[in-house]
Amino acid sequence: MEIPNSEFRIQIALFSSVMDPHLELWLVRHGETTYSASKRVAGWSDPQLTEKGRSQAQALSTVIDGTDFSGIWSSDLIRAVESARLAWGEPVPDARLRECNFGSLEGCSYKEADSTYGEVFRDFRGFQAPGGESHSEFRGRILQFVEELEPGRHLLFVHGGVIRALTQDLGIDRFVATGSLVKLDWDTAEAVMMCEPGNTERPA
Image 1 (cartoon, rainbow, N blue to C red):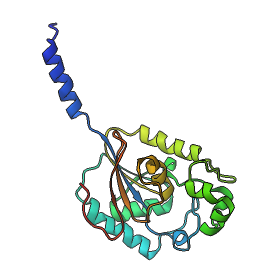
Image 2: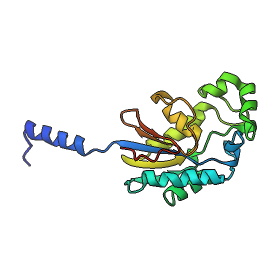
Image 3: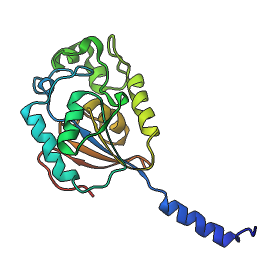
Image 4: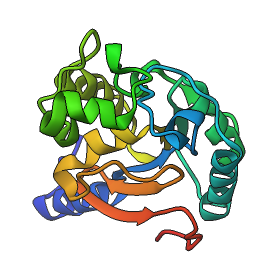
């Protein structure tokens, strides 16, 4: 077998790098729920979408319609699954994409959680939910899911905490509004775009 010359090998390498797709994540926060409407901590609780939440999810269909995705995924909690069905269609649910398990804070008002844990709860980094998950445990299971994805464009219907955990170091260190879409280039660690409710402009 003849060994290709160095110039030919370089051309093959360049061609391979061009053909190798990036891992692109389109992260959708589910629509408004009965808990988010009343400013209560949901976590692993499973509140239903409100009418506004269903409308938020349906509005996203005009933003993502016609886009090719390598995979459509969601948390296995009903608010994420229903949002996916309204915006796109049937997703593949995965429990690793659940919101943080907030333990005894589940169902508490944001004000109560804030007054109990203050800056730690708001900062969302060194947080340890009482009877629930630590931030590192929470982020670890999300990253495990992402690291198993094949290269390509993936649409994920998830939760505010999941999006924040993936974007805290990318310039979006806050909980995005329900019905928002955040687009990440995972390979270059860039937040490329954020589409909030009411903005139906198609992302690049």
